[in-house]
Every structure is written in C-alpha cells, then in structure tokens.
Image 1 (cartoon, rainbow, N blue to C red):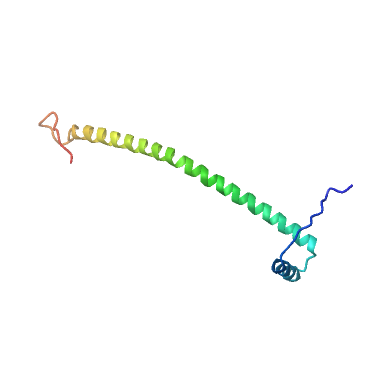
Image 2: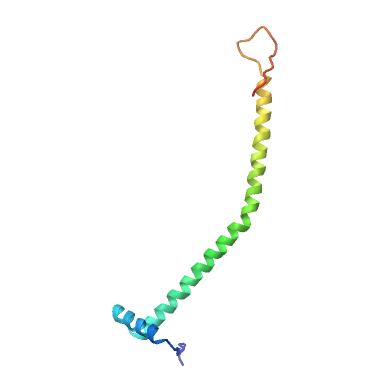
Length: 106
C-alpha cells in the first residue's frame, strides 16, 4: 500500500509547451518536476501568508505603539518642565550675596 497519490491535470497547449520546455532545460522527468513545483508553491504560499500576518500585526499594533510613544513624550515634557523650574530656582555657586535668585527660562 503506497502513501503517494496520483494527480491528473488538464493544461492548455501553451502551458503544456512551456512545461515541456522547462523540463528540457532542467533535465527532469515530469513527475519530479511537478512534485518540486508543488513543494515550491506551497512553501512560497506559506511565506506570503506569514508575511501578511506579520504586516497585519504591525498595522494593528501601530495605533497602540503611537499612544505609548505619545505618553512617553508627554511624560518627558513634564519632566523637562520640572527640571527647568528647579533649575531656575537654584543658587549660583559664586553668588554669596543673595540667598536665591529666580530666573525665567525661555
């Protein structure tokens, strides 16, 4: 009992002629050529499906990633403003006459 299956297909004259030319170029028998063609097609289809899934995943995550980036940017702005406020209230090390000077940073 064999695990292989037979396949019968109809080809147009042009496709059949192209098929025979490819067989001559590759020096293979018809069965081996068709088997390799099917394997290549299936592998290529899997790659395309995988890439489509990755693309869709990135597109779905794009909005979430943008929100996260904006939250980080907003937090950076708050921290920068706090830093500037603290900096504007600090003492100069060489200024011994006054306790503190306030500066407005633009």
